[in-house]
Image 1 (spheres, helix red, strand yellow):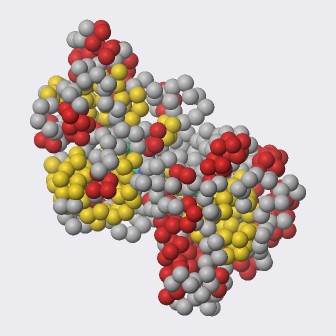
Image 2: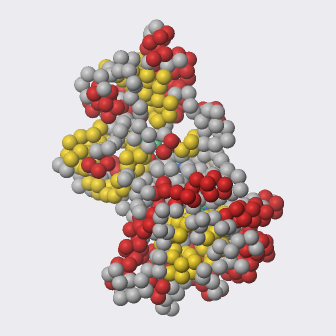
Image 3: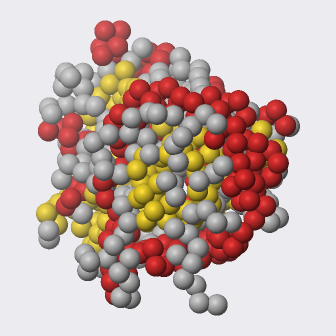
Length: 305
Length: 273
Ligand SMILES: Cc1cc2nc3c(=O)[nH]c(=O)nc-3n(C[C@H](O)[C@H](O)[C@H](O)COP(=O)(O)OP(=O)(O)OC[C@H]3O[C@@H](n4cnc5c(N)ncnc54)[C@H](O)[C@@H]3O)c2cc1C
Ligand SMILES: Cc1cc2nc3c(=O)[nH]c(=O)nc-3n(C[C@H](O)[C@H](O)[C@H](O)COP(=O)(O)O)c2cc1C
């Protein structure tokens, strides 16, 4: 069973296995030490970092939906400087790829955060969260306008030599377009999907359930949508893909690999099954060995149609 | 380590008025549990409902494999409704112990009040056992809508003095339990009052009222707050509450609480609609 080779190569980024925890669902990593050995994971994407600390939105910030949840946390985070001084050093002892998720309200903010992250000891790469409202452009998401996205990625590309992942927003008509734009701007890897914009309504109170009115939907409810988008992006571009959206177990992960992903990210599942990501690594190896697959990367794009 | 896995339901006793007592065979959770700490429980199969629900541990008992944890819960929605339908032998997924416990008073001679509102009774049988063991003499002040809602009194260790209040006057003091607290504190001399300790758990408006009573009498206390939680261990950032003097941020109820010292919650900011 241990004969299965789980390593995956995503352009400049090599992971010892394809199981990575998703931004905003895994804190700064060490919060999960009571539940699992962080060194079993292929990688960890930390909570979205902005230039300055952010306090986030007023509660209620989450709402449960059938097989899913809506969130409008508002990117509460410690800011890039505290991350570099306190959070990143705490992850140095672990043998896993640490990826910083970056958030900005303007192009310059992304660039400034990435400049600070570039060259940081123990950092394996940067993931740009482009599902953020661009305050300079009236609050439109960076990720939904291909031209704006290409410019943003190119601007960040100039200030860092770290592996650059662009995390696509699914709130578009054709996800192939922003995928191509991100690659044209210099993305090494694409990750998808971020949450789907949604809302919930309390009929009795005639109020939105979230203080922010709208939020992002995640969890098993979005898995079919996310699989389709991974499949679509794999056909549109030639760069490696990290797929996510509702993955709860190793079989879900296999489905994303078959759709065209080279690695997967585990999000909402961490909330209800905090040791689950580590379990999935073992289960994935077991699944491969049961199906006589010697190298997990054989699964990528292995969909029979 | 914090336990995360499945445990067996040993008993699910109907306490009346939609309240139940669940006994879980969870020695790994119970052995290091402290009063007011909680567990996240998922009852039922599949992914709907998706997230765990927080429950205080009401009692630590003896079980076939070591200690059991006992939860008192009230059916208010889907998660609690599904749990109420389970029989002995069912499996539940549990994460815990989680959160910061109620600190015990340094001096066992001070007056100690346990102030419970409705299902907020849950952490108090366990706390009472620990207080008695530490030589304290706690008095329970227990309020509910109606006398039938005053459940779980038989779960307390012997030797706890109890007084009840009901909104409809069907049992004990007709009115709010915070009025009982006010009356007791007012009867103490200033020095004793300032050393008195109250532990409070109940619905948010009741805790805000209790906090105001404690402030007025300059008494000490700890509140155990309620919130809908996504994870229970500090990463989803949903169960946040503003603290006094912390205008720029929030505390997380799950890891910074659920217990907070009296006077630390910014009720004004937390209740703005
Ligand atoms: C630390 C702690 C300890 C607790 N201990 C106990 C205990 O020992 N016993 C006990 O009975 N209860 C306890 N509770 C409360 C308990 O967790 C809730 O009653 C339970 O989660 C309800 O789940 P449900 O699925 O039955 O209800 P739900 O279907 O989730 O809904 C119940 C109510 O909550 C509202 N609601 C649902 N989602 C949200 C949201 N995201 N934000 C705000 N409101 C929402 C609904 O509108 C409804 O009014 C505790 C809570 C905390 C924080
Ligand atoms: C509470 C919460 C917070 C999140 N915060 C971030 C974030 O800061 N940056 C980001 O790029 N994605 C964030 N996400 C999106 C997840 O990383 C992931 O893309 C999404 O939840 C879909 O995967 P899932 O269904 O497995 O959760 C967040 C998701 C949740 C549920």
